[in-house]
Figure 1 (cartoon, rainbow, N blue to C red):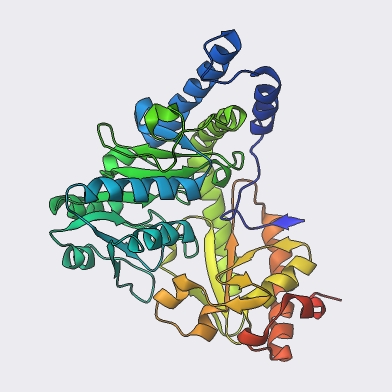
Figure 2: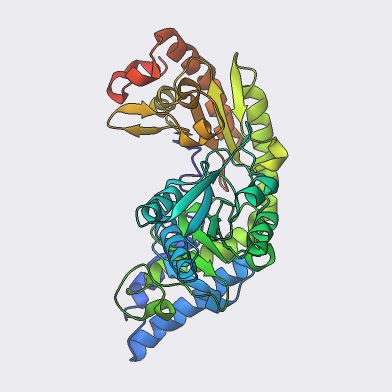
Length: 397
């Protein structure tokens, strides 16, 4: 199998699995218990908290552990909005480019009386400080914009965006899930009030993440229950997962520059070959303004889900710019936000390289992709009528 879907999840880094297994076997206590077993578990959680904090340039008390990015986005966005509402600020700003966890959290706020503004987006997925400044109001309580986009790979000027929000008295949250491990992170230096992280995007375990919360900032809990995580996230901590998260942060941080250079070189070769396929298009910003390993490509007349299925039949894992719901294609909201039509938005195929991607992996993709695109185009299947079950003929001979 050739795995080229690191933006969805990145395989465990060497050493993380061993740390998970050891923690699961040896740390038997509840970290809230005061006996010896509980104290050992608590010590492991706190040592991991220090590692995660160092990874993003934060203080240990600024890290709140969660079950992952989706919970983290909801905790940060809904909690900060609630705190802002107590000051009479019930206006939230976001964009049409955000991850579903962010759009879902913002939609939940809208259902409870918050007003929402979505910033305009350029054709290459850029967000401007000027557009944010124009959208800010006296009652704006929260701005939530990603540090890097999960489909396009665009990296955004979050420091300038956060400064603009703060100038009008608004709080700023960024979803840093895709950026972590791929670009240098100094969350306090960016000036954000909160940021979301997820372990499995950096080669750590699934179902564990964290929210950075600026020291001294009020963050009401999303859930009711116990007193864990300084009253911000009740529930028994996932001790083994948190230990693995801490190890993954150290490994990702130590290898980041070397991995970024390696992956960037692979992507440069990949995109050159992709654009040699007739009527191919790379979505998003210029290569140097995107994450090192993210490519969202579209092939005119070839629905992306069918191209991805054809690659899957060849043992190659990629993703799409579209979501498959009940067997039918829905255009990518991110691509629709760029102003393209639904058919073009349904053509996106996301190839995301990562820490263990090799040159033979890229070779394997390029060896079969032109033929798959040609077969999909020849089939003439419209995006609205495409189905997973009818795609078995899209693989190679």
